[in-house]
Length: 412
Image (cartoon, rainbow, N blue to C red):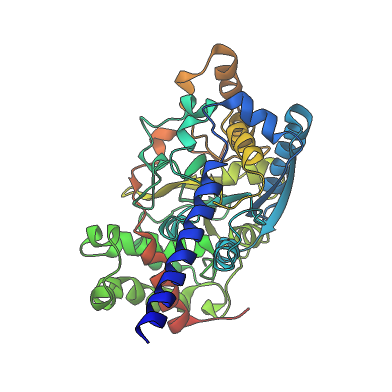
């Protein structure tokens, strides 16, 4: 019996060793962005399956332009896999790892941040740390002034993901219909009581809807520092009580009395255009100007923020540990950081997503790309955007969403 046990343990040890050798071999085969010419050679002819949110035609068009440019310049094909929920992409990589598929994975690049990044980092599902700051265009990234570029929802990025856009929560209204706007979450609830049916938020777990919950909780929490640490279940009810008390007050005065919710911030924009809503919001300071430029909102639209601050973060792209086209993904990621791609992305007529670059680091030609941008009549200047509130720890988003569904779960 003892011999059988020893043999069994030896077999398990051998399997574990073989698994470690396989993973080590995969890691050793990874392209090195410090040897960029080798990366370009490896990338040529590869197809990068980029899993990215597909809910905005303008963003989809931008990604299409990126793909066409990479094909022309580097011989890299880009397939935009349109995603509704990034958590499903994470699940795909988890399933592949569980099945022992440590190479030739379905996902080559993911648009990611927050709890999805934290999950992939924790489970070691991402390409070897430290590649992001070796990219040639990393030299232009504004690491000096944008702390969220190296910290994702309180989690250090450790070079596991590369930034490609900034975000800040901004509210929008139509000056033709609304004269006075609220200056805090509590004032917003009071405004909704005086203007019933004219405000709503997307249904969690939609990212923008969940962001509204986090904004409200950050403002209302007795001790906001608790939000920067993982949720302590025994404390959750007490810490979150001010939020859910406010929502109980707010919901009866919302659009359709909160019996239904819009699917996204894009849907909210349409409701404003249809004059069903008077105040909406998005995680993009140029959202209103971009909508005006594309005839999706009237030119009387304007932006505002709360003087106490609104949430801000950075969104990233990351490469799974078992990606098939790692070299191609690196070339794509580096291009996303180029002044050309960043300036085009910040143009409200294209997308309006803020840059992650420090424009002062650029040469004269690339500086002019940004200087020529007309950011639009509804875009607040940097000094008007107010303080940036830190994102809570990723665990708070998951826990708030779960509690929201338990209390208000709506299927529409």
